[in-house]
Length: 290
Image 1 (cartoon, one colour):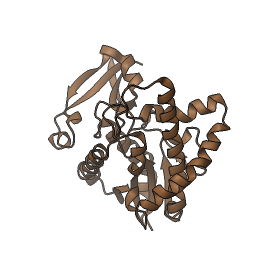
Image 2 (image 1 turned 90 degrees about the horizontal axis):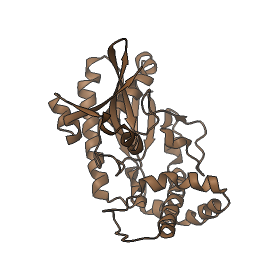
Image 3 (image 1 turned 135 degrees about the horizontal axis):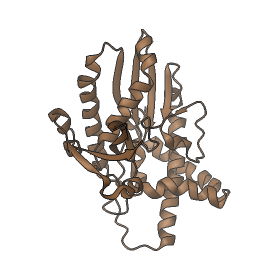
């Protein structure tokens, strides 16, 4: 049987990324990293390897993100996988299949049961939140604070106080914890299929009420901990012995801001890649000293 490596991720592009709501070099670099990381198994296991990107975009509405924007991300991600299979994998004789799996399509009874169960579990996670220390509470809502779409979202909030904003972010995080619990409850047999190995990005290391025991937490590239759907792909040019060495990395909004005018943009000549999203017209580069 093929070994299935399932990378579980949000399935959206964070609204703070310049390429929102579509993919950029970050997703391409993550593909490169994941295939390279698994290459010894891909190359050596004769029955084949399948890499699934498991999109949990069914939950992104909790962050006030319109479904239309999420659908655009899904469409661009599918195009990127098709491109990668055609342009990269076809050059090698590898027993490897790439695909995007949409979580909302995996519930036997549709998503209504998922939302119902999520609502039922909210009270439990509100109680859990109240038992956390101040530092733990801060960490719990950290990701929700960066992901929540205040402007141009499903709901127009208008002017809010800091307390009101905090309460909205807290509710979003609690709802997400309840979702993770409900989702696993409904799809436990799918996650625990004997030939599937679940993977997560660094979000799996965030403080959470949901344990990820036995799941591998991977960096997004060899040099980056910023998850590909959160950050933006860059080439880092490291000067060594008078020549630059280029490394694929992913930067967050705050990391990009620190670079300031150190960023340059190189033209991309790959017309097929440029058809996937406008962000592929150029590639951002910054230089550091080795």
